[in-house]
Length: 251
Image 1 (tube, rainbow, N blue to C red):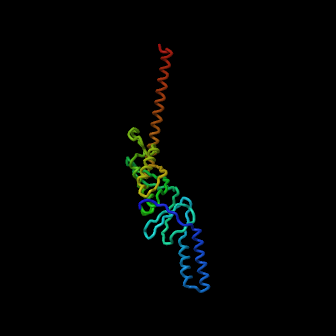
Image 2: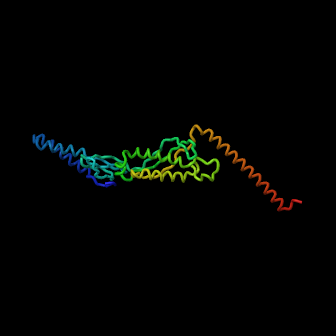
Image 3: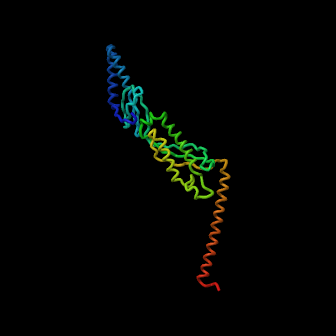
């Protein structure tokens, strides 16, 4: 067995009625001192009471018997199953995971702070329950590993020549988020975790170089502004010369 098997459990309301009948009959037999039948009937009633469970919408129960997988109940409601079954709850709802901000080096070796927001849900309860030790911790660890790999695959920004790095963490969010989602899908596939959305939630230079990078940004902005002013002035002169030439104002 390597995939989920859906099963239907008995109605909890029906078995509750059976349990009450057993316990009520046992009490009556104790009163009339018919002990040999009263005791087994009471034991049966008590055992039945330990087999009840319920499932909320978008929830599931994985059933195992002495280490053997017996199936998964997905339909919400009140149910009863073998009292010796081990019942493990696995939510099928979509979950948000906002990772911690981790310090990593980008492709150029600059220390940066980065975190991601992941929306995920369990697709196959068998793999989530038995292919990994703890599927929720598995999601956290693999997300952290994917973030570190992603950060080392792109520069935070390209200051020298924007043609060298067409995709950066700051400017290429669409492509970067797509790469992150693909990486997480591959890593979480073993536990059958469906990645619904993955994107960078926080991105900034690490504190020790943030001030220097801010000054560099400001200097770059000033240079770019001056280049625009020069380009504008040259354009105005060119337009003026063209106008003079057009109207034959030059002798």
